[in-house]
Each structure stands twice: as structure tokens, then as C-alpha cells.
Image (cartoon, rainbow, N blue to C red; front, side, top):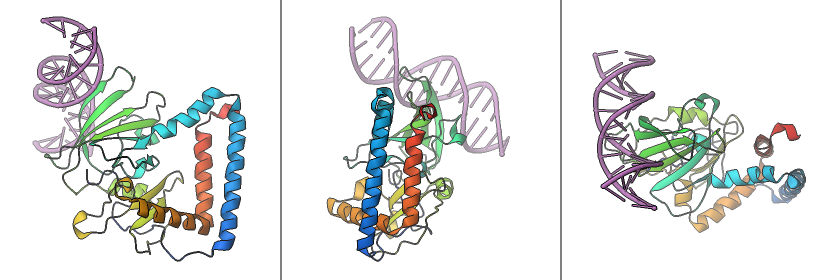
Length: 270
DNA sequence: CGGATTTGACCTGCGC
DNA sequence: GCGCAGGTCAAATCCG
């Protein structure tokens, strides 16, 4: 599918993207800052380990969920952005996990920027929640299908399986354009078409590669699909610089990570 | 009234 | 061949 997996703004160079390739920050004090943050991270990890040491079931919960939710090839954007991106070869079938928003509570609907027409629903054997079957509603000839089902282990997670590729470029964009409204927003200023943004909830970080070619539509190719090893290294370096340079971003990131950790641990243990 | 959704029936593939 | 489970169809229904 030509756009199902982008992590960048769907409009290409939307206003409000944090520059990844801007001027380099003064490195010295920033490295100190990064070190302090790393130490803090280790300290928090240690504390979490201590908490989980005598609670193996909770440890399993914390460590098993996120890795199991990965994006194969093209991920759906916006709300799926919390999923990690792997560099596996692009398969025809992709599985995407996303935490369901409260508004999705009663519907197996995963907003991913495309319009879908539901053509069936089935209760499967290994999951008490019904599986919904969708086809791309934009183009009748589009072969893409999507299956959406709540996770049996975590009902707040929606698991979407995409089959085939979109053979068209146009899409409904309004949904995730608004979803991706950022609190950290600056226009991309560097030479490479990358963007990173944090949504208004502070829970989702969107890393994107916007394809700027005239014929390719503003939608981006999934990061996992276009990143070469060299480019990945540049990307990582620039990300490190970015993180070192932006206190507000670090604050948001720390809050997001902390919220994520707390979210996965039942409140009563604290 | 037209498009989208629901839902029971039907089809297909697979294991035994 | 049979039964089961997943996937699809299409008529009925809903909704704007």
C-alpha cells in the first residue's frame, strides 16, 4: 500500500514539524544533559525492576506487550504511531497494533487515514472479540483489505491486519491530520525530508519521512521501508542532537514514557 | 433515497 | 468425505 504506513504528516510538510536537521547544538553541556537523563533512565529502570522483582506476572505484562505490537512494512499513521517500526522485509500482510481511543470503545475501527467499508464481521475461535473485515472504500479496484480485532489479552488494544497494497493515492486525511496536531511544532528546516512530532496527548511520538517527490503524493513511505543503514545512522545522530537540544521535547518525552509505564502497571500496586 | 453497516448464510481451505 | 474455522456475500436494516 502506498501510504498506509507513513509516520510523517500525511500532508507532506505540514506546519508544525520539529526540525531534525537544523543547526547543530552546542554539544558539551548537552552531552552532560543526555548523560544525566540516561542515568535517570537507568535509575527509573532499576526502580521498576525492583517493583517487578517479586511480581513475575506483572513483569510479563510489561515486557510482553510492546514488543508483540510491531509494524510490518507500512504501518497505519497517526494513531498507530505508538507502534515500533522494524526493519523487516516488506511482507504483503502487515500487522499493526494500536491502543484504542475511548471513542473507539464500541467499534473495531482504527483510524488510519483511509476510508474503509466494512463488509463482514466474525467471531473467531481464539478471541472473544469479533473480527471486522474492511475493504478500501475509496477505490473499488483497490485490493487492500483490513482486519481489525481487539486483542484478547488487552481489550484496549486494536490489532489491524492489512493485506495487499493501495493502488491509489488519494485518501481521507482529515482524521489524522487533526490527531497529529503537535505541541512541539517547527517547520522542517534540513535537507532531508524527515519530521518528528508529538500529539496533543503527549503519548504518541510520530517519526516520519515525507516523500517530497511530485508524483508520489505527500504521504510518506513508511520509515521502515525507506531507511537505509546509512540513513538510519544519520537519523539516529540527528535524533540524539534533537533530544539533547530541546528541553521541552525531553520533558514531554519523559512524561510520555512515564505515563506509558504507569499505564501498563495496575494502579493498586502503588 | 442513497450509502454504510449489520448479520446470517454460504464458500473455501485445511486437518483428520 | 466430514467437520471446523476463517473469509466473503448479499439482503435487510440503519442513518444522515
